[in-house]
Length: 327
Image 1 (cartoon, rainbow, N blue to C red):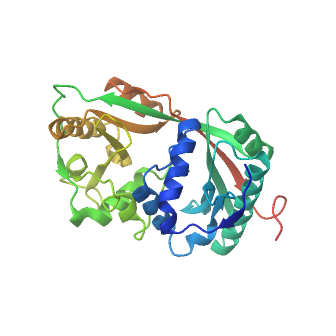
Image 2: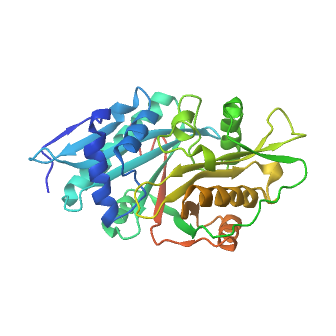
Image 3: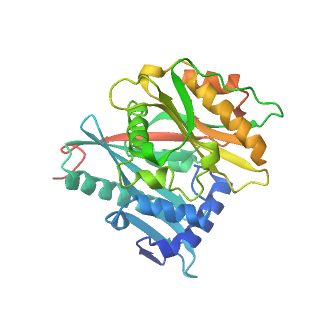
């Protein structure tokens, strides 16, 4: 399959992009959005200048068959983090794959220059059953850094009651804590180089402004005698799945700030979700976890989560001026 023309992504193209993502996910899953409103939300998080770093390919019947995206994921430790995304129709030609890949790399280099960063790290996903895609990445200097596992749990008839450590209060998500929750989120994920660290503009699309946000299943853990200026010790934001026959919720982002880790906060929040999910008619929970995060994996397995078989690989590459980049 060939490309008849390329263009930038626009919100109006969310439906055909969702159709492409659905078809690609059925063959080589990397956890792309599969509903138009979610794709529209994804494009919104790229910001006003982000459309210039997207590319939509159409075949000679004007069907969307390829998509590329370069996303600024923020700076951590003076290193700019850049996410590369590419999605193809299963029948796309290999040279089209290579062409889009090199376009993404060029765009990432320009983004590094535009942001004034001396160093950047590129991250991208690759389906476990996509050897062609992985080979292309490895030839271009990418290295496998981890696998993301998808876990599922059937909601039990009698979920365990949440048990709260002393001095902590479990509360629904409250807009009064919105900015504090964002800061807690970014602190909790500070040691994860691939995690999204939203700014004030992009936080709503990541959390309460997400089109599938489930407020009844989401919660905050507040410290009564908090350290510093932020009482948010932990957080859990849940989304409706919407793409399965079984009513399903996704534990979209779940984290605990360092001073309160290993204190049972995640177990308490998930127990609350299970009770509310059961009452709401939701029969399954899903989440994503890095295979190197042994404590989280042990916790989720203890709670009854099992692998769904839909994980993917994450590969990364350093991007610095000099040897691998023309000034």
